Length: 231
Image (tube, rainbow, N blue to C red; front, side, top):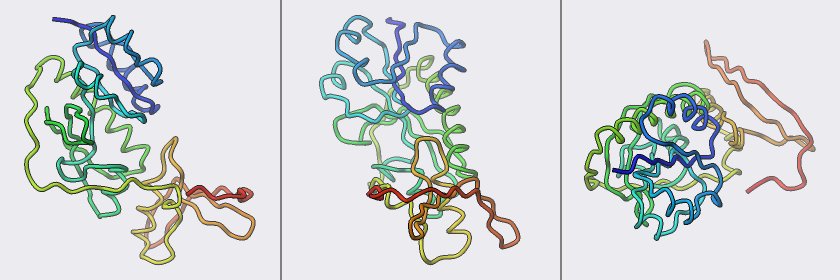
């Protein structure tokens, strides 16, 4: 059996987890961080047993999915929560925990059969949650490589999440402090647009939030408002 494996990801917490876990795993491992590196020549040369996608920002062609066993990881208990921005959509809905679903990728988004699921608490900042999830995902990768479970078709009611847009990071005008706390923390991670408000010529970003005794504290960064706020 081929002992070549590829991990394709772009997020820093997944790259750190790759460097942490891969030396402990059997086989030959290859990290891909750009779409051009996931080219047909590389795949034809390696003929990987699995291609794992902890987080990927580009569409995978149907040919690649057909010719390779591609595994992605989604932060919901599928088929609940198919679609984009799962962490933020879960927290907005008041969820305190979720599951990470490891599934075989098919052309339809988040619709493939499930290898396994693992629990994931949703406390802390988005950065803390993503880092926690990365450790769980690489433990799942280890199990998939060692056990090679047969994925099973998804069962149950299907619900979809809409991918959030940068404008959705603006602080809400109304709501209690718990909701405001969740809004700031769920956006507090590298590469994500932070919670913000605008005031005159200024853009005010919020991070590192805490809530104690009905008082919310946050790190604030004030800068000149760009000519166009991202939508």
